[in-house]
Length: 166
Image (tube, rainbow, N blue to C red):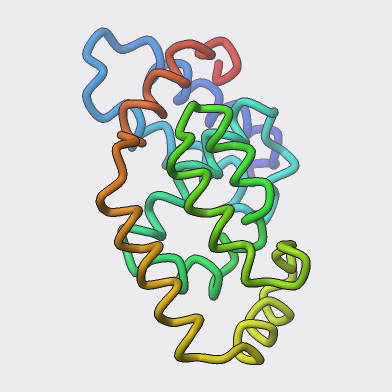
């Protein structure tokens, strides 16, 4: 039976092959899938180095936004990292997107999103639904209209920091 270290070595080898491609098409998607394996979809996020972590957080946020919006993001485990994801978005130069998430985070007490999913959902449910729903819908709309091209920014971030993925 393969140990975690064996799996990690295989994941690192796969990531190195992805990064080394001449054709950049699908690098972000394929690398994200490998990083998800490495950190077991966020359960072992501390196994990622800082560069991988930024990449993972930004990709996870984008996928959640495109699959149901900010409310869905908060209702699943990806929202555990909402506070840190603002900083990750700034790191890849997605300033407008970082501002959108920061505004959304402001609905929580003192602008701090609980890292525990149950606590986060409980706090969301304690808020005035009509006001929160309207506000989050507006932020979803801002995200979809946003000038930040997260795919391009993530690709640039990966290529600039490719050694960190090898």
